[in-house]
Length: 258
Ligand code: MN3
Image (cartoon, rainbow, N blue to C red; front, side, top):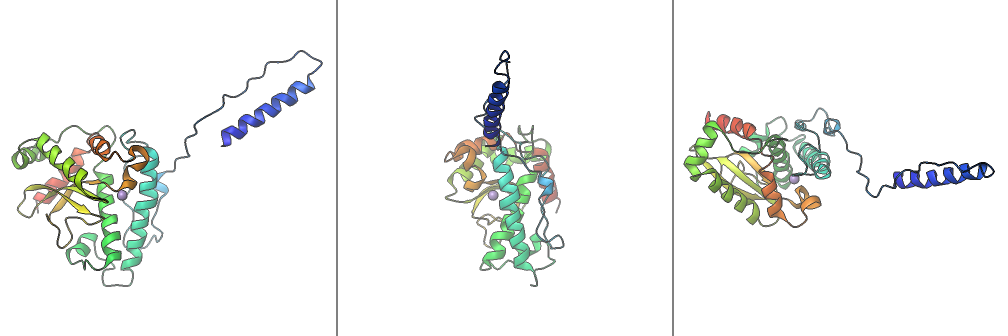
């Protein structure tokens, strides 16, 4: 709107200038081009902090700017996702554990003995952990295929990278409503694809395919609706362009070294 106002005031100034110079020859005045589209001001992810700076859980730093993954993930979605949704889960998790025996525990320790009836810790703890992993396993100028040990393990456990992709995309596409698709390392060191509802994850008690997540895809509508509307499959395809396989490999190596 500011640009529109500027344009209007430029017209008024032009008119005023012209009336002053009525008796002189008219001068040519440059009028700014009207702007039809104005990008909203973009914030800096480093300015987003947990409400309580001394609380157990602080936001994982976003390792890139909000617009770094565009057009696969647009800047506005990234900004809302990180500064509103993720911050919200973090603040609510801190509030939920404050003054309880869970305060001071790591998120993995909390999941290991989680009471699944504790909705505040289940939902916000999941939201905190899942998004922290999600930011880390994406990067600009990424995508392609995994290398080294992870590439070998994918070939061994899925047959090929393409078969893995089909299974992962299926899990993400078929998750009904809000949830996540995962690539996990199971207890016996194998790779498996699974999905979970809402903010649950494979570290929580009762998970259908328990394991350590090394790759996760958020399929909540807030993760894609602004850019993709109802076309979740297009969002899933675009995700492969931003997977940071080096980060996923590090998680694979850490999970299998246990
Ligand atoms: Mn989300």
